[in-house]
Image 1 (cartoon, rainbow, N blue to C red):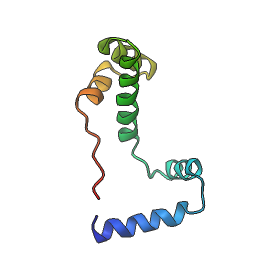
Image 2: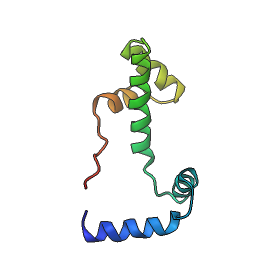
Image 3: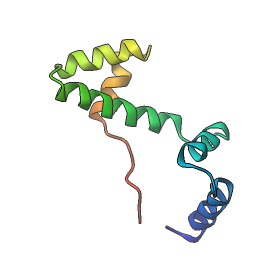
Image 4: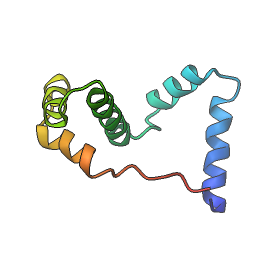
Length: 90
C-alpha cells in the first residue's frame, strides 16, 4: 500500500470509526464508496458456488440466478468464469 492509499484509508476510517460493521457498510454504500460491480461479481460467484454445492448443475444455477437478478445469462456467466475480483495487496 502506497502513501496515497494509506491516506485514503485513514480518511475512510475516520468516517466509520465507532460504527458497527453494518452501520459502516451502510454508510459507505450511501456515500458511493463501494464498487457495485465488484460486489455483484462477489455475490454471483458465491451464490453459484453455494447452489452447485447444494447439487444444482452449474449451467442451471447461472441461468436461474440471471433470472432472479433480472440480468443477462452472459453477465452471470462472465462473473463466474472470469473471476475479476482483485485480491487485496498488503
